[in-house]
Length: 294
Ligand code: G1P
Image (cartoon, rainbow, N blue to C red; front, side, top):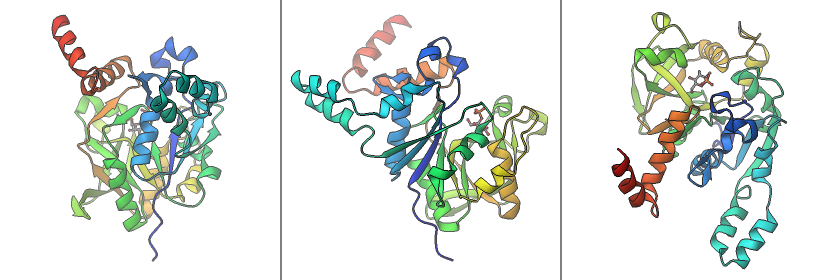
């Protein structure tokens, strides 16, 4: 069997209302809230670029025009930066939205993550693709690369996992391992089946939670199309993964990657402080200031 091609497309579901970050998100989509000077969505795009992606499909809502605006060319801003002698920043702005093709699909009602992914179907086409949840920021592109390696080798989808404490399990999709950990091509993974979305702790099949990175095969779209909305009226990606895994177990990559959940205010502040401490220009100043306030 021929190997599936390299993963070149990433789908980023970004149609949510961001209610945990209200009132800021009344006017600014949560995906554009800055982590220092870079919007979270740019960090996601940069992670995708680092894994060789050349097409990002953003599933957005018509109530969030700022997302499209962010990727549009801004010749006036660039020209005035050039005049001020800030050519490097002008060049950086020109690069955004250019070094990768960015397309938009629309999810007009909050009908769940599975529905959001299904909205991207026409733009994804018939090749494997990543799904990247923008509430989660990863320290680098290594996790995407690992997922891609597995999916390319086997032709079966792969999901990123992290062991979570029991009290956190109800927030995540939890997988059932159906075999031992194996290391192939430098990537450690285990076969998984049945995925349960946000179970009660007593019903959780393991402590392995899906974190927001997936490498999926395009047959997931037919599975999603066949799904009826669950009790909440939402179409869950985890249900589609469960059905797929009945045909052949999916791969789970247990990751140790540095990760921040920025969908809530505390996680967002932590991500900003962490980025600040690493910043070449402000890092030392921030560290000194933090010592004075703690
Ligand atoms: C989504 C998925 C869930 C996954 C989680 C990762 O849930 O439905 O399976 O574990 O992302 O963050 P959400 O956080 O959007 O409610």
